Picture 1: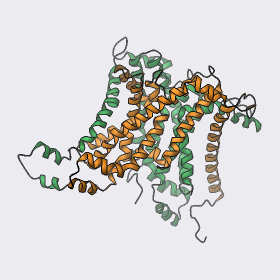
Picture 2 (picture 1 turned 45 degrees about the vertical axis):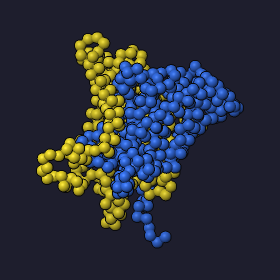
Picture 3 (picture 1 turned 90 degrees about the vertical axis):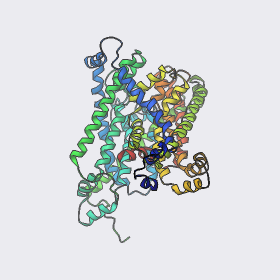
Picture 4 (picture 1 turned 180 degrees about the horizontal axis):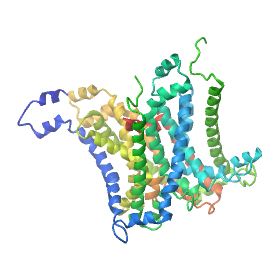
Length: 300
Length: 285
Protein backbone atom coordinates (compact mmCIF):
# COMPACT_ATOMS: atom_id res chain seq x y z
CA UNK A 1 0.00 0.00 0.00
CA UNK A 2 2.74 2.46 1.00
CA UNK A 3 4.61 1.72 -2.22
CA UNK A 4 1.49 2.50 -4.16
CA UNK A 5 1.09 5.83 -2.40
CA UNK A 6 4.69 6.74 -3.15
CA UNK A 7 4.52 5.61 -6.72
CA UNK A 8 1.47 7.52 -7.83
CA UNK A 9 3.62 10.60 -8.48
CA UNK A 10 5.10 10.92 -11.97
CA UNK A 11 8.35 9.02 -12.14
CA UNK A 12 9.34 8.86 -15.81
CA UNK A 13 12.00 6.14 -15.85
CA UNK A 14 10.37 3.39 -13.82
CA UNK A 15 11.51 -0.14 -14.47
CA UNK A 16 8.93 -2.60 -15.72
CA UNK A 17 9.24 -4.50 -12.47
CA UNK A 18 8.33 -1.41 -10.45
CA UNK A 19 5.44 -0.56 -12.69
CA UNK A 20 4.06 -4.09 -12.39
CA UNK A 21 4.59 -3.96 -8.65
CA UNK A 22 2.32 -0.92 -8.52
CA UNK A 23 -0.45 -3.08 -9.90
CA UNK A 24 0.40 -5.74 -7.31
CA UNK A 25 1.88 -8.03 -9.92
CA UNK A 26 5.06 -9.73 -8.69
CA UNK A 27 6.43 -13.20 -8.04
CA UNK A 28 3.59 -14.03 -5.65
CA UNK A 29 0.93 -13.05 -8.17
CA UNK A 30 2.47 -15.42 -10.69
CA UNK A 31 1.57 -18.33 -8.40
CA UNK A 32 -1.96 -18.04 -9.73
CA UNK A 33 -0.79 -18.82 -13.27
CA UNK A 34 -0.51 -22.65 -13.20
CA UNK A 35 -4.10 -23.05 -11.96
CA UNK A 36 -5.41 -20.41 -14.38
CA UNK A 37 -3.65 -22.03 -17.33
CA UNK A 38 -4.98 -25.42 -16.26
CA UNK A 39 -8.58 -24.20 -16.13
CA UNK A 40 -8.20 -22.41 -19.47
CA UNK A 41 -6.70 -25.51 -21.11
CA UNK A 42 -9.15 -28.04 -19.71
CA UNK A 43 -12.32 -26.04 -19.22
CA UNK A 44 -12.45 -22.92 -21.41
CA UNK A 45 -10.67 -24.46 -24.39
CA UNK A 46 -12.84 -27.63 -24.50
CA UNK A 47 -15.96 -25.46 -24.27
CA UNK A 48 -14.86 -23.27 -27.17
CA UNK A 49 -13.69 -26.33 -29.07
CA UNK A 50 -17.04 -28.06 -28.52
CA UNK A 51 -18.88 -24.93 -29.62
CA UNK A 52 -16.92 -24.73 -32.87
CA UNK A 53 -17.12 -28.47 -33.40
CA UNK A 54 -20.91 -28.37 -33.11
CA UNK A 55 -20.94 -26.24 -36.29
CA UNK A 56 -18.81 -28.76 -38.18
CA UNK A 57 -21.23 -31.65 -38.67
CA UNK A 58 -20.35 -34.98 -40.23
CA UNK A 59 -22.60 -34.14 -43.20
CA UNK A 60 -24.47 -31.06 -44.34
CA UNK A 61 -23.96 -27.34 -43.78
CA UNK A 62 -22.83 -25.66 -40.57
CA UNK A 63 -26.26 -25.70 -38.92
CA UNK A 64 -27.03 -29.32 -39.80
CA UNK A 65 -26.60 -30.64 -36.23
CA UNK A 66 -28.97 -28.08 -34.74
CA UNK A 67 -31.48 -28.54 -37.57
CA UNK A 68 -31.38 -32.29 -37.01
CA UNK A 69 -31.88 -31.87 -33.27
CA UNK A 70 -34.90 -29.58 -33.62
CA UNK A 71 -36.57 -31.60 -36.39
CA UNK A 72 -36.27 -35.09 -34.85
CA UNK A 73 -38.90 -35.55 -32.09
CA UNK A 74 -36.75 -38.33 -30.57
CA UNK A 75 -34.14 -35.62 -29.96
CA UNK A 76 -36.02 -32.38 -29.30
CA UNK A 77 -38.49 -34.03 -26.96
CA UNK A 78 -35.60 -34.70 -24.58
CA UNK A 79 -35.66 -30.99 -23.70
CA UNK A 80 -39.28 -31.19 -22.57
CA UNK A 81 -38.61 -34.46 -20.74
CA UNK A 82 -35.72 -32.87 -18.86
CA UNK A 83 -37.67 -29.75 -17.91
CA UNK A 84 -40.59 -31.92 -16.86
CA UNK A 85 -38.29 -33.60 -14.33
CA UNK A 86 -36.05 -30.69 -13.37
CA UNK A 87 -38.64 -27.99 -12.65
CA UNK A 88 -40.89 -29.96 -10.26
CA UNK A 89 -37.88 -31.54 -8.53
CA UNK A 90 -36.22 -28.16 -8.01
CA UNK A 91 -39.40 -26.52 -6.72
CA UNK A 92 -40.13 -29.42 -4.34
CA UNK A 93 -36.58 -29.50 -2.99
CA UNK A 94 -36.16 -25.77 -2.48
CA UNK A 95 -39.69 -24.97 -1.26
CA UNK A 96 -39.71 -27.76 1.34
CA UNK A 97 -36.24 -26.80 2.47
CA UNK A 98 -37.37 -23.31 3.58
CA UNK A 99 -39.80 -24.12 6.42
CA UNK A 100 -37.65 -27.02 7.58
CA UNK A 101 -34.49 -24.91 7.65
CA UNK A 102 -36.37 -22.21 9.59
CA UNK A 103 -37.35 -24.80 12.18
CA UNK A 104 -34.05 -26.64 12.34
CA UNK A 105 -31.93 -23.50 12.87
CA UNK A 106 -33.07 -23.35 16.52
CA UNK A 107 -32.42 -27.04 17.10
CA UNK A 108 -29.67 -28.11 19.49
CA UNK A 109 -28.36 -31.16 17.66
CA UNK A 110 -28.20 -29.44 14.30
CA UNK A 111 -24.85 -30.94 13.50
CA UNK A 112 -26.17 -34.50 13.77
CA UNK A 113 -28.96 -33.76 11.30
CA UNK A 114 -26.66 -32.03 8.83
CA UNK A 115 -24.24 -34.95 9.07
CA UNK A 116 -27.00 -37.42 8.24
CA UNK A 117 -28.10 -35.29 5.30
CA UNK A 118 -24.60 -35.02 3.87
CA UNK A 119 -24.51 -38.80 3.38
CA UNK A 120 -26.97 -38.99 0.43
CA UNK A 121 -25.06 -36.17 -1.31
CA UNK A 122 -21.77 -37.95 -0.75
CA UNK A 123 -22.93 -41.38 -1.88
CA UNK A 124 -24.02 -39.98 -5.21
CA UNK A 125 -26.72 -40.78 -7.72
CA UNK A 126 -25.41 -44.15 -8.89
CA UNK A 127 -25.69 -45.69 -5.45
CA UNK A 128 -29.06 -44.06 -4.80
CA UNK A 129 -30.32 -45.53 -8.08
CA UNK A 130 -29.22 -49.04 -7.11
CA UNK A 131 -30.63 -48.65 -3.60
CA UNK A 132 -34.00 -47.40 -4.81
CA UNK A 133 -34.22 -50.21 -7.37
CA UNK A 134 -34.23 -52.66 -4.47
CA UNK A 135 -36.07 -50.59 -1.89
CA UNK A 136 -38.89 -49.34 -4.14
CA UNK A 137 -39.06 -52.43 -6.37
CA UNK A 138 -42.18 -54.60 -6.53
CA UNK A 139 -40.79 -56.86 -3.79
CA UNK A 140 -39.08 -54.08 -1.87
CA UNK A 141 -39.74 -52.98 1.69
CA UNK A 142 -41.63 -49.85 0.61
CA UNK A 143 -44.23 -51.76 -1.38
CA UNK A 144 -44.42 -54.45 1.32
CA UNK A 145 -45.18 -51.76 3.90
CA UNK A 146 -47.87 -50.30 1.65
CA UNK A 147 -49.46 -53.72 1.25
CA UNK A 148 -49.24 -54.32 5.00
CA UNK A 149 -51.46 -51.28 5.49
CA UNK A 150 -53.86 -52.54 2.85
CA UNK A 151 -52.77 -50.44 -0.09
CA UNK A 152 -52.10 -51.91 -3.49
CA UNK A 153 -48.69 -52.37 -5.00
CA UNK A 154 -47.35 -49.22 -6.67
CA UNK A 155 -44.97 -49.21 -9.59
CA UNK A 156 -42.20 -46.86 -8.55
CA UNK A 157 -39.15 -47.87 -10.59
CA UNK A 158 -38.31 -47.84 -14.29
CA UNK A 159 -40.57 -44.84 -14.78
CA UNK A 160 -40.88 -41.11 -14.17
CA UNK A 161 -41.65 -41.54 -10.44
CA UNK A 162 -38.43 -43.44 -9.80
CA UNK A 163 -36.26 -40.71 -11.28
CA UNK A 164 -38.22 -38.01 -9.48
CA UNK A 165 -37.78 -39.78 -6.13
CA UNK A 166 -34.06 -40.15 -6.71
CA UNK A 167 -33.82 -36.45 -7.58
CA UNK A 168 -35.54 -35.59 -4.31
CA UNK A 169 -33.39 -38.01 -2.32
CA UNK A 170 -30.14 -36.57 -3.62
CA UNK A 171 -31.36 -33.01 -4.25
CA UNK A 172 -33.30 -32.19 -1.10
CA UNK A 173 -30.31 -32.50 1.29
CA UNK A 174 -28.32 -30.21 -1.00
CA UNK A 175 -31.07 -27.59 -1.18
CA UNK A 176 -31.70 -27.90 2.57
CA UNK A 177 -28.08 -27.43 3.63
CA UNK A 178 -27.78 -24.45 1.31
CA UNK A 179 -30.97 -22.84 2.66
CA UNK A 180 -29.87 -23.58 6.23
CA UNK A 181 -26.60 -21.76 5.68
CA UNK A 182 -28.48 -18.71 4.41
CA UNK A 183 -31.08 -18.86 7.19
CA UNK A 184 -28.48 -19.08 9.96
CA UNK A 185 -26.84 -15.98 8.48
CA UNK A 186 -29.88 -13.87 9.37
CA UNK A 187 -29.58 -12.00 12.63
CA UNK A 188 -32.22 -13.47 15.02
CA UNK A 189 -32.68 -10.09 16.72
CA UNK A 190 -34.46 -8.81 13.59
CA UNK A 191 -37.14 -11.42 14.08
CA UNK A 192 -37.25 -10.90 17.82
CA UNK A 193 -37.86 -7.20 17.25
CA UNK A 194 -40.73 -7.96 14.89
CA UNK A 195 -42.10 -10.46 17.37
CA UNK A 196 -41.97 -7.88 20.16
CA UNK A 197 -43.89 -5.50 17.92
CA UNK A 198 -46.57 -8.16 17.60
CA UNK A 199 -45.86 -9.71 14.20
CA UNK A 200 -47.18 -13.25 13.87
CA UNK A 201 -45.08 -16.04 12.35
CA UNK A 202 -46.57 -15.57 8.90
CA UNK A 203 -45.98 -11.83 8.85
CA UNK A 204 -42.43 -12.27 10.17
CA UNK A 205 -41.72 -14.68 7.35
CA UNK A 206 -43.24 -12.56 4.61
CA UNK A 207 -41.89 -9.17 5.70
CA UNK A 208 -38.52 -10.01 7.21
CA UNK A 209 -37.20 -13.45 6.35
CA UNK A 210 -38.33 -13.75 2.74
CA UNK A 211 -36.80 -10.46 1.54
CA UNK A 212 -33.53 -11.30 3.30
CA UNK A 213 -33.56 -14.81 1.87
CA UNK A 214 -34.48 -13.80 -1.68
CA UNK A 215 -30.90 -13.64 -2.90
CA UNK A 216 -29.93 -16.97 -1.33
CA UNK A 217 -33.08 -18.69 -2.55
CA UNK A 218 -32.50 -17.51 -6.11
CA UNK A 219 -29.00 -18.97 -6.04
CA UNK A 220 -30.32 -22.12 -4.40
CA UNK A 221 -32.95 -22.55 -7.12
CA UNK A 222 -30.34 -21.96 -9.84
CA UNK A 223 -27.91 -24.53 -8.43
CA UNK A 224 -30.61 -27.10 -7.71
CA UNK A 225 -32.08 -26.65 -11.17
CA UNK A 226 -28.75 -26.96 -12.95
CA UNK A 227 -28.04 -30.16 -11.02
CA UNK A 228 -31.38 -31.78 -11.71
CA UNK A 229 -31.26 -30.67 -15.33
CA UNK A 230 -28.10 -32.70 -15.84
CA UNK A 231 -29.53 -35.89 -14.33
CA UNK A 232 -27.92 -38.88 -15.97
CA UNK A 233 -27.25 -42.11 -13.99
CA UNK A 234 -30.64 -42.30 -12.30
CA UNK A 235 -32.50 -41.45 -15.54
CA UNK A 236 -30.83 -44.46 -17.15
CA UNK A 237 -30.88 -46.93 -14.25
CA UNK A 238 -34.07 -45.98 -12.47
CA UNK A 239 -36.16 -44.50 -15.26
CA UNK A 240 -37.37 -45.40 -18.70
CA UNK A 241 -34.36 -44.27 -20.77
CA UNK A 242 -36.16 -44.87 -24.05
CA UNK A 243 -39.40 -43.24 -22.93
CA UNK A 244 -40.55 -40.72 -20.35
CA UNK A 245 -37.16 -40.12 -18.77
CA UNK A 246 -35.13 -39.90 -21.96
CA UNK A 247 -33.41 -36.71 -20.81
CA UNK A 248 -31.10 -34.53 -22.84
CA UNK A 249 -27.94 -35.94 -21.24
CA UNK A 250 -28.90 -39.40 -22.52
CA UNK A 251 -29.22 -38.01 -26.05
CA UNK A 252 -25.79 -36.39 -25.76
CA UNK A 253 -24.25 -39.57 -24.37
CA UNK A 254 -25.73 -41.71 -27.15
CA UNK A 255 -24.50 -39.34 -29.84
CA UNK A 256 -20.98 -39.38 -28.43
CA UNK A 257 -20.52 -42.99 -27.31
CA UNK A 258 -22.97 -45.00 -29.39
CA UNK A 259 -22.96 -43.17 -32.73
CA UNK A 260 -19.41 -41.76 -32.27
CA UNK A 261 -20.65 -38.42 -33.64
CA UNK A 262 -18.73 -36.00 -31.40
CA UNK A 263 -19.93 -33.05 -33.47
CA UNK A 264 -23.58 -33.88 -32.79
CA UNK A 265 -22.78 -34.67 -29.14
CA UNK A 266 -21.13 -31.27 -28.77
CA UNK A 267 -24.18 -29.60 -30.31
CA UNK A 268 -26.45 -31.35 -27.78
CA UNK A 269 -24.10 -30.38 -24.93
CA UNK A 270 -24.25 -26.75 -26.12
CA UNK A 271 -28.07 -26.89 -26.22
CA UNK A 272 -28.05 -28.34 -22.70
CA UNK A 273 -25.75 -25.57 -21.50
CA UNK A 274 -27.89 -22.95 -23.22
CA UNK A 275 -31.09 -24.21 -21.51
CA UNK A 276 -29.38 -24.09 -18.10
CA UNK A 277 -28.05 -20.60 -18.76
CA UNK A 278 -31.45 -19.36 -19.94
CA UNK A 279 -33.18 -20.58 -16.78
CA UNK A 280 -30.46 -19.19 -14.52
CA UNK A 281 -30.74 -15.77 -16.13
CA UNK A 282 -34.53 -15.93 -15.91
CA UNK A 283 -34.42 -16.73 -12.17
CA UNK A 284 -31.83 -14.10 -11.35
CA UNK A 285 -33.75 -11.40 -13.22
CA UNK A 286 -37.02 -12.50 -11.61
CA UNK A 287 -35.42 -12.01 -8.20
CA UNK A 288 -34.58 -8.38 -8.90
CA UNK A 289 -38.16 -7.96 -10.12
CA UNK A 290 -39.56 -9.25 -6.83
CA UNK A 291 -37.24 -7.52 -4.45
CA UNK A 292 -34.95 -4.56 -4.69
CA UNK A 293 -32.82 -3.24 -1.88
CA UNK A 294 -30.17 -4.43 0.51
CA UNK A 295 -30.10 -8.08 -0.45
CA UNK A 296 -28.11 -10.97 0.94
CA UNK A 297 -26.12 -11.01 4.12
CA UNK A 298 -28.64 -10.06 6.72
CA UNK A 299 -25.94 -10.00 9.37
CA UNK A 300 -25.41 -6.70 11.15
CA UNK B 1 -38.07 -21.27 33.02
CA UNK B 2 -39.72 -17.90 33.32
CA UNK B 3 -38.78 -16.73 29.82
CA UNK B 4 -41.16 -18.09 27.26
CA UNK B 5 -39.71 -18.84 23.82
CA UNK B 6 -41.54 -16.36 21.58
CA UNK B 7 -41.00 -18.61 18.55
CA UNK B 8 -42.48 -21.78 20.03
CA UNK B 9 -45.60 -22.91 18.14
CA UNK B 10 -48.70 -21.68 19.97
CA UNK B 11 -51.89 -21.96 17.99
CA UNK B 12 -53.12 -25.42 16.86
CA UNK B 13 -52.37 -24.42 13.26
CA UNK B 14 -48.76 -23.62 14.08
CA UNK B 15 -48.41 -26.86 16.04
CA UNK B 16 -49.78 -28.83 13.08
CA UNK B 17 -47.39 -27.06 10.73
CA UNK B 18 -44.42 -27.80 13.03
CA UNK B 19 -45.53 -31.43 13.26
CA UNK B 20 -45.77 -31.70 9.45
CA UNK B 21 -42.21 -30.40 9.09
CA UNK B 22 -40.80 -32.94 11.52
CA UNK B 23 -42.89 -35.69 9.93
CA UNK B 24 -41.40 -34.92 6.51
CA UNK B 25 -37.88 -34.89 7.89
CA UNK B 26 -38.36 -38.18 9.70
CA UNK B 27 -40.05 -39.76 6.67
CA UNK B 28 -37.13 -38.67 4.52
CA UNK B 29 -34.45 -40.04 6.85
CA UNK B 30 -36.32 -43.29 7.58
CA UNK B 31 -36.68 -44.00 3.88
CA UNK B 32 -33.05 -43.19 3.19
CA UNK B 33 -31.82 -45.42 6.02
CA UNK B 34 -34.17 -48.19 4.87
CA UNK B 35 -32.82 -47.89 1.33
CA UNK B 36 -29.22 -48.26 2.50
CA UNK B 37 -30.20 -51.12 4.80
CA UNK B 38 -31.97 -52.91 1.94
CA UNK B 39 -28.73 -52.82 -0.09
CA UNK B 40 -26.70 -54.15 2.86
CA UNK B 41 -29.22 -56.90 3.69
CA UNK B 42 -29.43 -58.00 0.06
CA UNK B 43 -25.66 -58.23 -0.20
CA UNK B 44 -25.60 -60.74 2.67
CA UNK B 45 -28.76 -62.65 1.66
CA UNK B 46 -28.99 -66.00 -0.05
CA UNK B 47 -32.42 -66.00 -1.66
CA UNK B 48 -34.78 -63.08 -1.18
CA UNK B 49 -38.14 -63.70 -2.79
CA UNK B 50 -41.54 -62.65 -1.54
CA UNK B 51 -40.44 -62.09 2.03
CA UNK B 52 -39.36 -59.33 4.39
CA UNK B 53 -35.91 -60.81 4.80
CA UNK B 54 -33.72 -63.25 2.83
CA UNK B 55 -34.01 -66.95 3.61
CA UNK B 56 -30.49 -67.15 5.04
CA UNK B 57 -27.34 -65.07 5.29
CA UNK B 58 -23.96 -65.60 3.67
CA UNK B 59 -20.82 -63.69 2.82
CA UNK B 60 -20.09 -65.48 -0.42
CA UNK B 61 -21.38 -62.59 -2.59
CA UNK B 62 -18.43 -60.52 -1.46
CA UNK B 63 -16.04 -63.19 -2.73
CA UNK B 64 -17.86 -63.46 -6.04
CA UNK B 65 -18.15 -59.67 -6.43
CA UNK B 66 -14.42 -59.37 -5.71
CA UNK B 67 -13.64 -61.83 -8.52
CA UNK B 68 -16.39 -61.01 -11.04
CA UNK B 69 -15.91 -57.26 -11.03
CA UNK B 70 -12.10 -57.39 -10.61
CA UNK B 71 -12.55 -55.21 -7.56
CA UNK B 72 -8.88 -55.57 -6.68
CA UNK B 73 -7.89 -53.74 -9.88
CA UNK B 74 -10.79 -51.31 -9.66
CA UNK B 75 -9.87 -50.31 -6.12
CA UNK B 76 -6.23 -49.79 -7.08
CA UNK B 77 -7.29 -47.58 -10.00
CA UNK B 78 -9.68 -45.68 -7.73
CA UNK B 79 -6.98 -44.94 -5.17
CA UNK B 80 -4.47 -44.01 -7.88
CA UNK B 81 -6.92 -41.57 -9.43
CA UNK B 82 -8.02 -40.12 -6.09
CA UNK B 83 -4.45 -39.85 -4.79
CA UNK B 84 -3.23 -38.09 -7.91
CA UNK B 85 -6.23 -35.75 -7.99
CA UNK B 86 -5.81 -34.81 -4.31
CA UNK B 87 -2.07 -34.20 -4.70
CA UNK B 88 -2.29 -32.23 -7.94
CA UNK B 89 -5.27 -30.12 -6.96
CA UNK B 90 -3.41 -29.19 -3.77
CA UNK B 91 -0.24 -28.31 -5.69
CA UNK B 92 -2.13 -26.21 -8.25
CA UNK B 93 -4.83 -24.82 -6.00
CA UNK B 94 -3.05 -23.69 -2.82
CA UNK B 95 -0.46 -21.39 -4.50
CA UNK B 96 -3.21 -19.88 -6.67
CA UNK B 97 -5.35 -19.27 -3.59
CA UNK B 98 -2.35 -17.65 -1.89
CA UNK B 99 -1.86 -15.24 -4.79
CA UNK B 100 -5.56 -14.39 -4.85
CA UNK B 101 -5.69 -13.85 -1.09
CA UNK B 102 -2.59 -11.64 -0.86
CA UNK B 103 -2.56 -9.61 -4.08
CA UNK B 104 -5.15 -7.28 -5.57
CA UNK B 105 -4.06 -7.37 -9.18
CA UNK B 106 -6.09 -6.13 -12.17
CA UNK B 107 -8.39 -8.82 -13.53
CA UNK B 108 -8.69 -10.60 -10.18
CA UNK B 109 -12.49 -10.69 -10.43
CA UNK B 110 -12.17 -12.31 -13.84
CA UNK B 111 -9.84 -14.97 -12.42
CA UNK B 112 -12.29 -15.71 -9.60
CA UNK B 113 -15.09 -16.02 -12.15
CA UNK B 114 -12.87 -18.42 -14.10
CA UNK B 115 -12.60 -20.61 -11.00
CA UNK B 116 -16.32 -20.36 -10.22
CA UNK B 117 -17.52 -21.55 -13.63
CA UNK B 118 -16.29 -25.17 -13.47
CA UNK B 119 -17.98 -25.51 -10.08
CA UNK B 120 -21.31 -24.05 -11.16
CA UNK B 121 -21.61 -25.75 -14.55
CA UNK B 122 -22.49 -29.41 -14.00
CA UNK B 123 -19.91 -31.99 -15.16
CA UNK B 124 -22.27 -33.58 -17.63
CA UNK B 125 -22.50 -30.33 -19.63
CA UNK B 126 -18.77 -29.78 -20.03
CA UNK B 127 -17.86 -33.49 -19.78
CA UNK B 128 -18.51 -34.39 -23.41
CA UNK B 129 -16.49 -31.53 -24.99
CA UNK B 130 -13.76 -32.17 -22.39
CA UNK B 131 -13.65 -35.89 -23.19
CA UNK B 132 -13.49 -35.08 -26.91
CA UNK B 133 -10.46 -32.85 -26.39
CA UNK B 134 -8.81 -35.40 -24.10
CA UNK B 135 -9.32 -38.22 -26.61
CA UNK B 136 -7.81 -36.05 -29.34
CA UNK B 137 -4.77 -35.39 -27.19
CA UNK B 138 -4.52 -39.18 -26.59
CA UNK B 139 -5.34 -38.82 -22.93
CA UNK B 140 -8.77 -40.42 -23.31
CA UNK B 141 -9.43 -43.93 -22.11
CA UNK B 142 -6.47 -44.11 -19.74
CA UNK B 143 -5.55 -43.17 -16.22
CA UNK B 144 -4.01 -39.78 -17.07
CA UNK B 145 -7.20 -38.70 -18.86
CA UNK B 146 -9.36 -39.67 -15.90
CA UNK B 147 -7.07 -37.75 -13.53
CA UNK B 148 -7.02 -34.64 -15.77
CA UNK B 149 -10.81 -34.64 -16.15
CA UNK B 150 -11.35 -35.00 -12.41
CA UNK B 151 -9.01 -32.09 -11.71
CA UNK B 152 -11.25 -29.66 -13.62
CA UNK B 153 -13.75 -29.14 -10.78
CA UNK B 154 -11.34 -29.91 -7.89
CA UNK B 155 -8.64 -27.30 -8.62
CA UNK B 156 -11.15 -24.41 -8.50
CA UNK B 157 -12.72 -26.00 -5.41
CA UNK B 158 -9.39 -25.97 -3.55
CA UNK B 159 -8.72 -22.39 -4.66
CA UNK B 160 -12.10 -21.09 -3.47
CA UNK B 161 -11.98 -22.97 -0.16
CA UNK B 162 -8.42 -21.88 0.62
CA UNK B 163 -8.77 -18.13 -0.12
CA UNK B 164 -10.59 -17.29 3.17
CA UNK B 165 -8.22 -19.56 5.14
CA UNK B 166 -5.19 -17.71 3.82
CA UNK B 167 -6.79 -14.28 4.26
CA UNK B 168 -7.11 -14.85 8.00
CA UNK B 169 -3.36 -15.39 8.44
CA UNK B 170 -1.57 -12.21 9.46
CA UNK B 171 0.67 -11.08 6.56
CA UNK B 172 3.08 -9.54 9.10
CA UNK B 173 4.32 -13.04 9.95
CA UNK B 174 5.46 -13.43 6.36
CA UNK B 175 6.94 -9.93 6.30
CA UNK B 176 8.95 -10.73 9.44
CA UNK B 177 10.31 -13.89 7.81
CA UNK B 178 11.18 -11.89 4.72
CA UNK B 179 13.08 -9.36 6.82
CA UNK B 180 15.18 -12.21 8.18
CA UNK B 181 16.02 -13.21 4.63
CA UNK B 182 13.62 -16.04 3.84
CA UNK B 183 12.64 -16.42 0.17
CA UNK B 184 9.10 -17.05 -1.05
CA UNK B 185 9.71 -20.80 -1.24
CA UNK B 186 11.05 -21.01 2.32
CA UNK B 187 8.17 -18.88 3.61
CA UNK B 188 5.82 -21.30 1.94
CA UNK B 189 7.41 -24.40 3.44
CA UNK B 190 8.25 -23.12 6.92
CA UNK B 191 5.45 -20.65 7.64
CA UNK B 192 2.45 -21.01 5.38
CA UNK B 193 2.18 -24.77 5.09
CA UNK B 194 2.24 -25.34 8.89
CA UNK B 195 -0.25 -22.51 9.48
CA UNK B 196 -2.49 -23.60 6.64
CA UNK B 197 -2.29 -27.31 7.40
CA UNK B 198 -5.82 -27.55 8.90
CA UNK B 199 -7.33 -25.71 5.94
CA UNK B 200 -5.40 -27.71 3.36
CA UNK B 201 -6.33 -30.95 5.11
CA UNK B 202 -10.03 -30.04 5.12
CA UNK B 203 -10.03 -28.95 1.48
CA UNK B 204 -8.17 -32.03 0.28
CA UNK B 205 -10.36 -34.41 2.28
CA UNK B 206 -13.41 -32.88 0.62
CA UNK B 207 -11.70 -33.26 -2.76
CA UNK B 208 -11.04 -36.89 -1.89
CA UNK B 209 -14.67 -37.62 -0.99
CA UNK B 210 -15.94 -35.80 -4.07
CA UNK B 211 -13.53 -37.61 -6.38
CA UNK B 212 -14.47 -41.07 -5.12
CA UNK B 213 -18.11 -40.26 -5.89
CA UNK B 214 -17.47 -38.31 -9.12
CA UNK B 215 -19.32 -40.32 -11.73
CA UNK B 216 -19.83 -38.27 -14.90
CA UNK B 217 -16.30 -37.10 -15.67
CA UNK B 218 -14.75 -40.51 -14.97
CA UNK B 219 -17.49 -42.24 -16.94
CA UNK B 220 -16.80 -40.08 -20.02
CA UNK B 221 -13.02 -40.46 -19.96
CA UNK B 222 -12.38 -43.94 -18.54
CA UNK B 223 -11.37 -46.89 -20.70
CA UNK B 224 -11.69 -50.55 -19.71
CA UNK B 225 -8.57 -50.43 -17.51
CA UNK B 226 -9.19 -47.06 -15.88
CA UNK B 227 -12.64 -47.44 -14.31
CA UNK B 228 -13.09 -46.20 -10.78
CA UNK B 229 -15.38 -47.90 -8.27
CA UNK B 230 -18.41 -45.70 -8.95
CA UNK B 231 -18.18 -46.25 -12.72
CA UNK B 232 -17.77 -50.01 -12.26
CA UNK B 233 -20.87 -49.92 -10.05
CA UNK B 234 -22.81 -48.06 -12.75
CA UNK B 235 -21.88 -50.64 -15.40
CA UNK B 236 -22.83 -53.46 -13.04
CA UNK B 237 -26.26 -51.97 -12.31
CA UNK B 238 -26.72 -51.12 -15.99
CA UNK B 239 -26.08 -54.75 -16.97
CA UNK B 240 -28.17 -56.09 -14.06
CA UNK B 241 -29.30 -59.60 -14.87
CA UNK B 242 -25.90 -60.61 -16.17
CA UNK B 243 -24.66 -61.04 -12.60
CA UNK B 244 -26.47 -61.90 -9.40
CA UNK B 245 -28.12 -58.86 -7.83
CA UNK B 246 -26.50 -59.69 -4.51
CA UNK B 247 -23.06 -59.45 -6.12
CA UNK B 248 -23.86 -55.95 -7.36
CA UNK B 249 -25.02 -54.99 -3.89
CA UNK B 250 -21.86 -56.41 -2.36
CA UNK B 251 -19.96 -54.04 -4.63
CA UNK B 252 -22.34 -51.21 -3.65
CA UNK B 253 -21.58 -51.89 0.03
CA UNK B 254 -17.83 -51.80 -0.64
CA UNK B 255 -18.37 -48.50 -2.44
CA UNK B 256 -20.40 -47.11 0.46
CA UNK B 257 -17.80 -48.17 3.01
CA UNK B 258 -15.00 -46.57 0.98
CA UNK B 259 -16.90 -43.30 0.62
CA UNK B 260 -18.32 -43.11 4.13
CA UNK B 261 -15.02 -43.97 5.83
CA UNK B 262 -13.42 -40.96 4.19
CA UNK B 263 -16.50 -38.83 4.82
CA UNK B 264 -16.29 -39.62 8.55
CA UNK B 265 -12.62 -38.61 8.57
CA UNK B 266 -13.46 -35.44 6.64
CA UNK B 267 -16.28 -34.52 9.01
CA UNK B 268 -13.82 -34.45 11.92
CA UNK B 269 -12.27 -31.42 10.27
CA UNK B 270 -15.15 -29.63 8.53
CA UNK B 271 -18.69 -28.57 9.24
CA UNK B 272 -21.04 -30.60 7.02
CA UNK B 273 -22.77 -27.49 5.65
CA UNK B 274 -19.40 -26.42 4.24
CA UNK B 275 -19.48 -29.32 1.84
CA UNK B 276 -22.26 -27.60 -0.05
CA UNK B 277 -21.87 -23.98 0.87
CA UNK B 278 -18.20 -23.00 0.92
CA UNK B 279 -17.91 -22.30 -2.75
CA UNK B 280 -21.51 -21.22 -3.15
CA UNK B 281 -21.05 -18.45 -0.58
CA UNK B 282 -18.39 -17.02 -2.84
CA UNK B 283 -20.88 -17.10 -5.67
CA UNK B 284 -23.35 -15.09 -3.65
CA UNK B 285 -21.17 -12.02 -3.52
